[in-house]
Amino acid sequence: MSCSLSADGSDEFALRTRIQFGAIKNDNASENIFPSGFLNFDEGLNLNRAELILEKVPQSNIKPRIGPFPGPKPSLAGWGFEIDLRYGEDAAITFGLDDELEINEGNERLYLLPQWFLTGYLPIGDGFSWIAGSWFTSIGHEIGAPVDPPTAFYTHAYAFTYQPVKHVGAMGALKLPFDRESGLWSSGLGIVQGWNNLQDNNNDKTLIFDLRWRSPDFRTWIDIENIVGYEQSEQGTTDQTRPFNAVSSTDEKLLRRMHSVTLSHRFTRTHRIVVNAVYGKQEGGDTIADANNPPGFLITQESRWYGINLNYYFQWRENKQLGMRAEWFRDEQGAHALLPEGIYRSLTMNLSWWVQDGLRIRPELRYDQYSGNGKPFAGQVPTIFFGEEEQQWVASLDATWFYTL
Image (cartoon, rainbow, N blue to C red; front, side, top):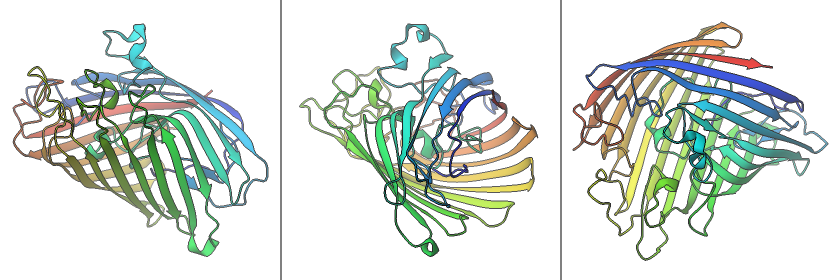
């Protein structure tokens, strides 16, 4: 994950809000704009999220999921927390929590608690920080955490569609004692309940670990992030491991792993690039899905997915930024429960305009092209294998309002 934050935090309580609306449309007869729109399935106006975020950020020179920062090490230990309440259609639920709320039954706009965690700092070594609870993943370039701005694009890369959204568990990060001339280094290690789980159906936890480097001038970042664990689904229960489902009739452990490498560099105040490469693999089970499910709903052979996306940002004025993203992505055996195997290519361009402090307007245009045996576009959700198109144009306009109370 790459982002921009202050180094030491505020160590004060803050109540923030974020509201995001979006209008989105494709160029075919279907109202379905998935997978280009990710959590947005239908054309039209969407309330993506209305959020309240209560937090206290401890002073620290390192943050778990983000990495080290320049400056002296705080000499005192500190603690903090964050609680997020979200209502809207960006609804990647946590199995064992949000999906069990009666208020969400049958609704497209859901109430969620996507993040609730404690965090802290200890003056150990060159600095140590930790996080425990429910939190958005650090795996990949794009994540769901409310970093301001959250992401540069309204739609998401395929790498985001194939990665975990959040975890329940604990993670620590240590700033490594290297000379300042060699840059800033940190290493992180965490144990979680798998992918998007509060409840896990097996007794094996999942491991997260990372290595991060920042150049001495802080203009170049390298993030190497990994998640490894047994993620087989319980017989008859596939909700808790989506978007990948593999079931063993003999309770065999089925390993899943994903790796992400992100390189970002700021050439000048106005020009910045980010390159993200991902690789993932899921072991297959021996249980085949029934005929009511789409092909590939249950993984029965070793399945791999991998790709690369290039992001370029040009901020020619303080309140205006041009963003461009190009992606190549391959799913070899149809690992994703909602997408056919094949090669996906996409090009995205947008303009981010901060009309005033806290208000951003963002028009965006995206083109997707697919090569393979399926047709992922212009189909019906959730069974989109039987679509009618191998390409899709998507135009969108979103507005996001950020405010600290």
